[in-house]
Amino acid sequence: MQALLIVAHGSRRSQSNDEIRALAAKVGEQSAETYGYVSSAFLELAEPSIPDGIQQCIDEGATDITIMPFFLSAGRHVVNDVPELVQAKQGENPQVRVRMAPYLGVSGLMPSLILQAAETACDCQGGANCTYPACITG
Image 1: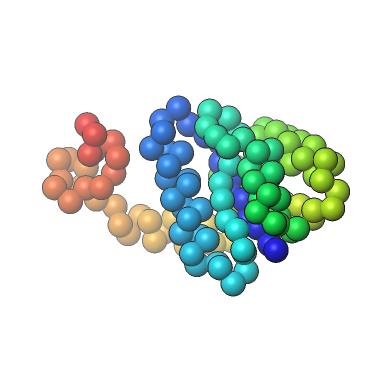
Image 2: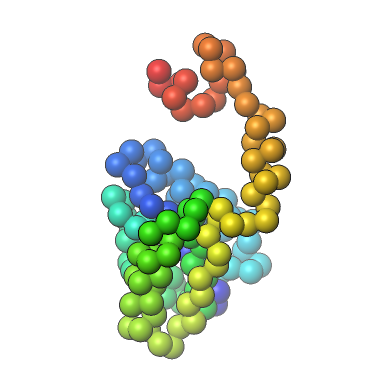
């Protein structure tokens, strides 16, 4: 069975971590034919950790796991931290194929995604229809 693990940094703000979990659930709904299990894990500040997230995939029956780094640039976490954690867990489970997808920011789809998101900008000067978190919470 194939699994997809979306890996994010993690935040002290629980709502931010919940956004990643909700994203994983939506991806799971849309990819059920490809991935039998979709989940999320975090580098720090939230659970599950990356090694624990990989283990959850294995416990669910995954024999092929794709790690999707939910990062926008090739900083230290993308270049060093995430691959080191993944490689260590792979070493403990040689029977499982673990692959790293390119980090999100390098995707060729990013320019069009940015332009689409810009089209949905709201008026943050007290606009009643604004959905931006900083405007909602003040």
